Length: 304
Image (tube, rainbow, N blue to C red; front, side, top):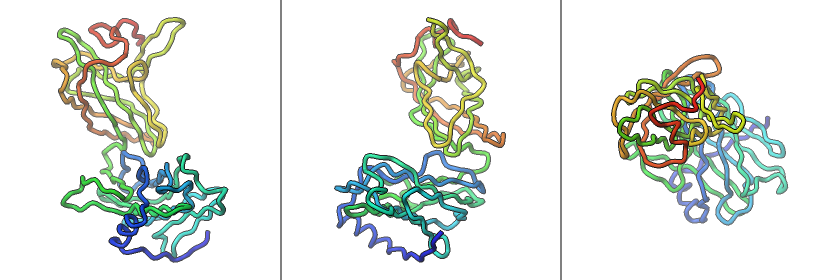
């Protein structure tokens, strides 16, 4: 690997340059949501799914590694030259030619592997994206006073989690409203585990039992059955939605009416067999197109 020394532009200059050169892109360069555990070896996969404004290709990606991230290696890309700074604080991929540059219509990942700090915290990775026309400086970091502020050019964010917290992103989780007397209903969510895992258990104070279910054709009949776990491949979204995988809430402990927020605990198991939990919430909604009989008071069509 070739080593070069890079200098980091001053923060205010970087932001000004991005604004003056009109390099706002259509989407940010981000790390997979869900976080990673303290002290773990983490693949920081920077997702690039666009070029700079008015550009056709991305020709270079430069990542500044924050304090606390212990660099181990960067993953090479065919047709690109990989370089690091002398102190391994900056990693750069540069396309060898126009033919190997990343088209604006394609999405890919640039991966840096490292060890995370031993204390839970949030790390920010400033990223410079160089294109055939212009560049974009994804370097803005929110202030401690307003950590939720929306930034125009945000740096890639990683939540470093306590060891007992499951690294998973649970997006748009919702529960179908239940009619009076109904003993069961369905919950739905899109899950992504950045490092890969299995969903092995789910619980909720609103139900006596929550099972992971799948729907499959048995001849000409759609049947449902409980499954012991659900694989969550690394950095891939897995949808639990009406008509497919879903969470079955049974023995309801309370009325489930639209507008409520219900609490759930997800239990994930990693490749080493270690189990961790993540608390999430879900909004109760009406509608959906899953088979109503499957989420009604009985369990017709279920196979256990």
